[in-house]
Amino acid sequence: MSIELRRDYLLYRHEGLDIPGRDQPVPLQIRFEAHPFYETYGLAPQDYPRVFADPGLASPHRMPDDSLCLFYPADPPERRWTADDGLLALLDLAGDHIYFETYWRHTGGRRGGKWLAPEAPHGYPGRTR
Image (tube, rainbow, N blue to C red; front, side, top):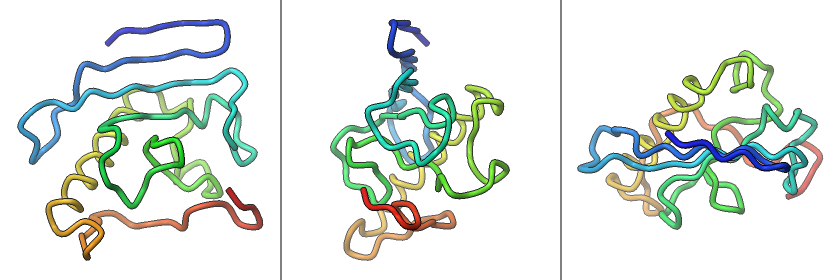
């Protein structure tokens, strides 16, 4: 893993997570913004990083900037990732998400693909994207 520290962000680049059903490891990037340009829905910036993997591939759970939609920000802390959980927990969460996306695409994708985890609504109550 490589780390890039800038004045406004911290970027982790992982060479690739081993994902069941994938022939090759999947590289990913985790970006923590000091002053996010995106909506954090009231969460501290360190609790709402952007995680990028498989850019451009179809998924029912991506943010408008193509980052992975990993959790519902309105959930209580025990149901979503926080910085206190650590980077390894975020990598595990991202790996699970990539696997769910892979399975979803292999089972039909937008034509009825199956998502293997509980799903939360997109957006935030009372707010629009």
